[in-house]
Amino acid sequence: MQLSLASVILSVLLACQANPAPRCKAPGHTTSDKYFGDASGDIVGAAYFLTDEPTGNFIVGSDIGSDGLLTLRRAVHAGGVGAHGLHDLGPDPLFSQGCIDLSAEKHVLVTVNPGSNTVAAFKIDPTDPTNLKMLGKPVDSHGDFPASVALNKAADRACIINSGTHDGVSCYSIDAKKGLYEIPNTVRPVGLNQTTPPTGTSGTLSNIIFSEDETKLYVAVKGTDPAINVDTHPGFFAVWDIQHDGSLSEKYTRIPVPEGGKQPFAMTPIPNENAILGADGAAGFYVWDLETIDQGVPGPRSSVTPVEGQSSVCWSRYSSCTGNFYVVDGVISNITQVTLDENLKPTKVMNFPQDIFDATIDFEIVPINDQDHMYILAANATAVHVMQLAPDEMTRIQSLDFSVAASTVGLTIDPNNVQGMKVFLK
Ligand SMILES: *[C@@H]1O[C@H](CO)[C@@H](O)[C@H](O)[C@H]1NC(C)=O
Ligand SMILES: *[C@@H]1O[C@H](CO)[C@@H](O)[C@H](O)[C@H]1NC(C)=O
Ligand SMILES: *[C@@H]1O[C@H](CO)[C@@H](O)[C@H](O)[C@H]1NC(C)=O
Image 1 (cartoon, rainbow, N blue to C red):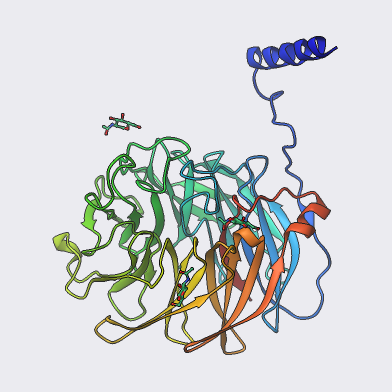
Image 2 (cartoon, helix red, strand yellow):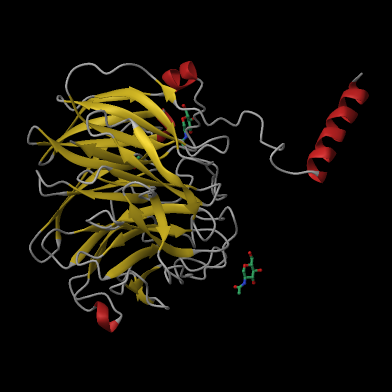
């Protein structure tokens, strides 16, 4: 019996190999959207994260009520499959910040399918913002393992990073009806000698953003090679010039991470300053003064500051209500508030410990009723925590567990695969 069953399976496998796609679709692969339940009360926005599952990548959307609290609503298929880097198979599969970006003004959301090497754009229904409709079809990411997206302010362009064997950036114009179109002369390698999926976390691309004036593209690069000691070969920023037609300079300028930095991860512009604050996965957080960017070096106000008890400080955001920055450690689950003075020197660094096994990763901060709210993916707790922020204070007002609801609607979730957090406000 067993032998004949095995030989049937073998012949099916062989038949599949001889005659590949479309009959080789992986078992359990699913593309149909899931619905968690109806809306109730006032909806002021939505929060989204990615399942990044190899059997089907979904954008999980929750309504945000006028009280800032979340209600799970929909999981929308992102048009491909997820993937996980090889470093360890724990949370933070893409070694990135920003796998989802959106424009609240233009009602457009863009994300990646890391296992399909595609990028997909969606229209956000502003009256029912978890209702996402794909614009056109997913397009080629022009590399392997796409991991982070940046939209420009007008939301008519998107640039992404690929972090696998064929690494680098590529950019698209966004047509509000038809979706993404490749912008010529934007597929540019970094040249990290990675694998697909990447061995990471060292030697991978972490985050991509436009400069404030949108004449440059910044990419944070961790380490230089997975095989080399990060202490002697720290990471850097790859900076491309953006031409008027949206094309990129052929080569990037390599700007070293500020002294003491190792694994630049997230990048958060400092408002009204020509500078960026970001998380560094091996060093704490950095301030990158852009003043001397044309000379290829970090400016005089640059610095690196360790965080007490740090293990992997990888994500960063700014809170406009409190005027503080926040960085998050994904391994010890401490959320850290950082206060800067006018010389960009940190004057206060305060930790807000979460549950030790939460694995807090991607987050976003938005004002609701004149108070900043933090939405943070607690990956290993399969939850999104909602925090109310005040200077030197943080109050958790909700922890929305999504594992039970996901299994109820037949959505595959793995705490090690979920990634990303982005908020739409009406
Ligand atoms: C690329 O990485 C492989 C190991 O994954 C190594 O054997 C090879 O020497 C590297 N090549 C370069 C050019 O660094
Ligand atoms: C989190 O931060 C607190 C306060 O700085 C610190 O005492 C603690 O050691 C940190 N947690 C871990 C697990 O290191
Ligand atoms: C995830 O949580 C489990 C307990 O629920 C714990 O054993 C494990 O170490 C945690 N993993 C991480 C990466 O925090």
